Image: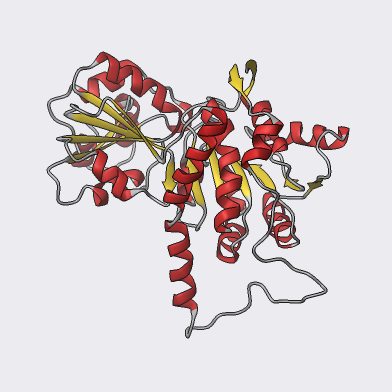
Length: 396
């Protein structure tokens, strides 16, 4: 049954029903409401047995999460932006050691300059740290993806990030269906760690590995990560039989006869569905599982498209589109022309009218910045004597 609630509180509620045993966390906007609510549940005894660890930093939060996981506890945390970057070293350790931690990333821009609003620069900067990455297109998906994340993480013994756009999703109030405790228990079995530290049966986890075996360790880790696409689909089908809500690694909309397909991750999906309804010949591909990248699925769904536009909420300075690179590799050898549109940086709205102008344009550059204020850029460039006229023209 749906009821009106803030998405962050709904996330805390569903995470609680997944029965975590340890929650180490450090507050950072816009994630804070999630861990605040979990802390209140633990303190009140409604989430028990569970320990809330108040740590001194995000690095400490992830380090504690790794330790708790290997002590045999189902473990959860949440972060955003610079907090995620502060965890970077520990994130690689979590995946390399195979710790099945689930973490919410409330996507937020990375400074400088300081910006607390939404884009996906934080999670994209750590896309290759070995974690499974799931991106929620809406808040109902965000709720359900957390339950799926625990199941997938523990089946593969790999950590999972559930990424949801900060403020746009985390702070929105809307009718949401949170699966009941009975539904979650029916889907998510008790945590049985694949590897655990036990004083009665001592083992070493994370020992030094030299050149003679390091390649093989990384190869096996990559193979296990690649299995996540199929594992996610299997569990998503089982989850649908319990809740009636089905999710896929990649969701498509109106692509059957589309000449132009827009690819995106996250909450821009809703605006893109409106765009496809309004503009004939436009379809939408929403990627829910970004790591591992479901290349075969993407290639099959884009097989008939003449033009593919990848809407990015982050980009790689000096290189261009991040998701675009994966999409281009997936459709290599087909006739599709792939373009990058970068929009929504630092919380700037992605407007339907702006997207309509993009998809109806006769020609697009390889990289286009949506709603770029060229007057501001030109004025700043003209103040710098080292910038040539050629570079000023390039922004147009």
